[in-house]
Length: 124
Image (cartoon, rainbow, N blue to C red; front, side, top):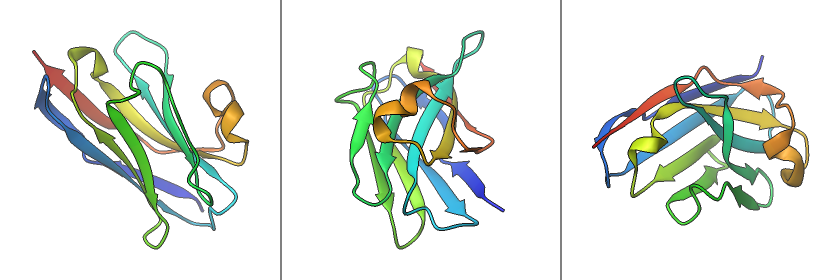
């Protein structure tokens, strides 16, 4: 059974940093693309970043490009999202997800597996 467990969320001041982790288990993810999505209060869930497990190719939403970095630790089956220069508009529940779809389609297609999310709150 696939499990994606997020951690690392919390309260941070604007301009600060947080690192989110996603521990993945239950299968071999070598053919998967891993993604981070977020959902702010009253808004739809949106794409943040994605990375291919095998080759480490990455994609970012324009709103986080240059501030957030996605990475993966193959040995520990963990995906990270380093978030710097945080803004109040980054406040959201952040979800880790996995899909066998291509990186180029992740942001607009359904994911196969989802975690339960971790809350990030950025104060002014």
